[in-house]
Image 1 (cartoon, rainbow, N blue to C red):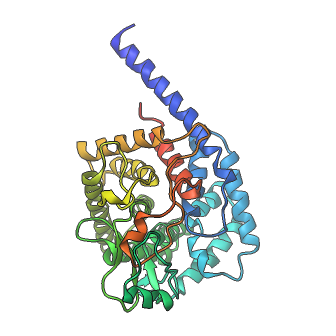
Image 2: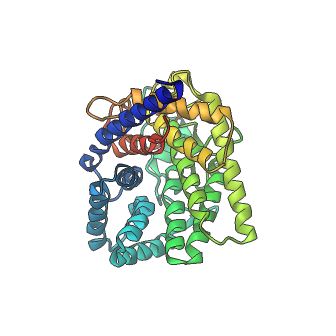
Image 3: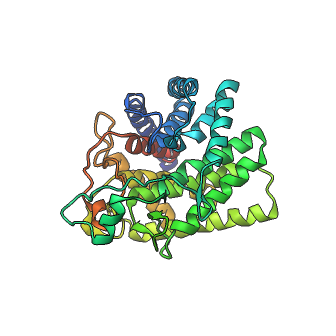
Length: 373
């Protein structure tokens, strides 16, 4: 056998192995505890859409479509947590199944979401932010205790993965400029509010409070990066004005700056710490899944290039695949982080949970990498 034939055979084996792993992990998605809707559902529904396409198995997309149609039957009255609906995935399902009823519900949802109050131009996530007593042993300082007792409205980085991609995708599908223009502006607003000079994103900002809170939360970096890249990828299909193109260039620069920071902070094992620049914050593996997927897409779209991001994405993917147990569960994924003004809270969130924000990005990363030998 020639060297090239050996390389081809090894590549085929590697792809088969990765596809087998993808099937195992994807099979966990319909079994997860979705809340219709709550934080973290979105990435798993996007993973179901992607897994059906890559595996040529319609069952996952059909499951997601059925769940979305059930939501549509009870959608009214809307509630604040509907901002976490997997809107981008549902727009894809509308297009795939030519579902006019679900599309009508999504248009109505978008109009509701556009009616919310804003903080520095960005839709307020909560009228009273869900602050909690910190995990760990460090107590809240006096100001933190006051905020916990009477939390003000706030904007949270998770929602960069919800509103902007949904609005841009809906605008693209319905040819409605006000949706996609708002989605792009929202994405840029999150960048301006929550991206630090380092390139990393902080978790949240509170109305009336100076500065931001919870710098460097690992999974928060994933929500931010995927939200920006979704917006950039969808907007490639739109006829943009010069002003909007300028906004898109700023979003691409923000993603590149964040990726550069994450490449610098990646551990030798391919993972990142729970707070990516704090070794004392411990392990948490969902960040690697988000980054394996997000950085790979950024490379594919030309947002970043070069050996640094390529090697970081490959190390992250290897780390994710090594961290998947025989039952398809990505190990060392933390529970819902909630939010705290005490930075050490993020060091002590319980881990080893089987949740949409662990399984979803693991599936998406495997889908993205299935053609990489």
